Length: 465
Image (cartoon, rainbow, N blue to C red):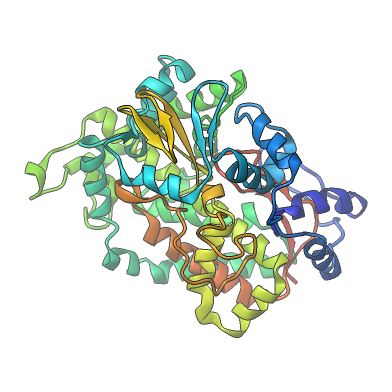
């Protein structure tokens, strides 16, 4: 089993005896300070009792691979999917799902699909039509950058990339440091915090809000909208999830129409304000081609969403992982310069985005398996990033790992446009948190986000005194 993910199982058992004072509420899953801190000895016990993934497949692995269905998963998968990924890589690396789609778990197969965007399309209109119907969710997810092929993908990506140059991102660093230090100051005064709500999630919402110049007093609903819309990308949805997602898109679009009208009347600096840049179109390239109103609004939603949950998960997953792999945390404290490679290992070890999707445009083959045109393909990034063919001791968290060519940001023309910004946020957030609170520890039962596609926590009680 994978190292850190056993914290979900072990703490779920152990902390029930320690956290009688914890109070969860709908949405934020907050907790009070009456929870008893989980000792460092417990963290050590969690790691000690966490074996590495077995090097030899067992007969049970074959059965796990045979029975795997992405649309029917139990809670244990959300806690720790890596044994299942191991079984699939070993026995059915190109797994045919009951619905006819394919599920890929080997690094080389996932990367091969990323390398060939002509054969493997990102356009989701055909796949999403039966899932969403004629709804706001369908319009959003089939118009946004990530689920489109060129030329729309190219036009939008150019506009976004122009505001995310190396120079522009470097200029954000001082503001990020001030933001993170302010959050750390507040945490120090409390002694116990929610690592997600009070820290990890508070960073990207401000960063992306600044990028689009969303007024500070209007940012409060952004996180809930984002969670509802991205939650609707899960492989299997309930009617309530559909309803929440559609309502979130409707409310988000209504808000953005008003914001766009205000920005048209008083434009910002397109070198720094992505919203103004999207409104005006890229001057001097592509004939200054502008986006349609629908493209503009839906890609503003995409930018706010894409820069939010995945970065929250990166920071949260990274800090939880370091709290368990204490020798790696100690190494980072001794050598702060390791923060860059530590962030890369966090991205690989607990990838924020576990799944990607493509559709075959022609008859082809994947890993020697014939695949017909029109076949949906799920790329399991989380499994590829634990593939022993690519990574030595893949279930070990090693902040000195090199090389570390993980696929957490994708690969090829659809590689995450904001990867440099996400890395900067994580380096500052994780690095400064660890230095400020070198002995921080998980002090109660963490609550998983309950997602298959986006892996992270909804709440993590953390002692920082």
